[in-house]
Length: 129
Image 1 (cartoon, rainbow, N blue to C red):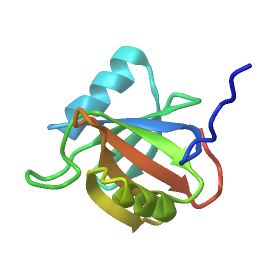
Image 2 (cartoon, helix red, strand yellow):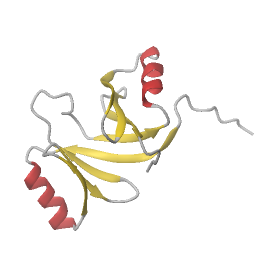
Image 3 (cartoon, rainbow, N blue to C red):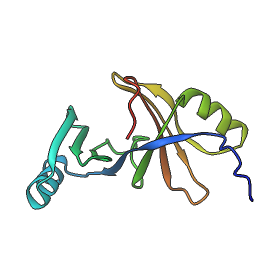
Image 4 (cartoon, rainbow, N blue to C red):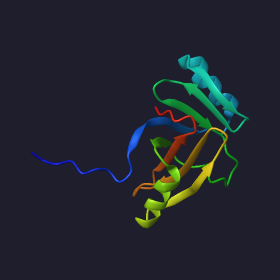
């Protein structure tokens, strides 16, 4: 019987997938009207969510040059974003955006070996998925 090694960073769930939108109004219309997706939270013109439970679909419209710009990203719910980032730094994982706190969560962006973006995410209310 093989023993499964305990992961260094436990992933609780996938919280969201985020796409960059060059035109937020057009993108919200596309997903809302063509697919009938129910709108979720919205934070200014920068961030919009669709309630596609159990995983949220997010649109992000960052300014050019912003560290928010980039490839599609998946958000993995972890128990402690700040501890995860410190661990990953020691493993020499590329940190794209250091851990930060928003009004509703803690988050950081890292890159996998192929440059794909991964958001480490921790909701302040303790929920995941």
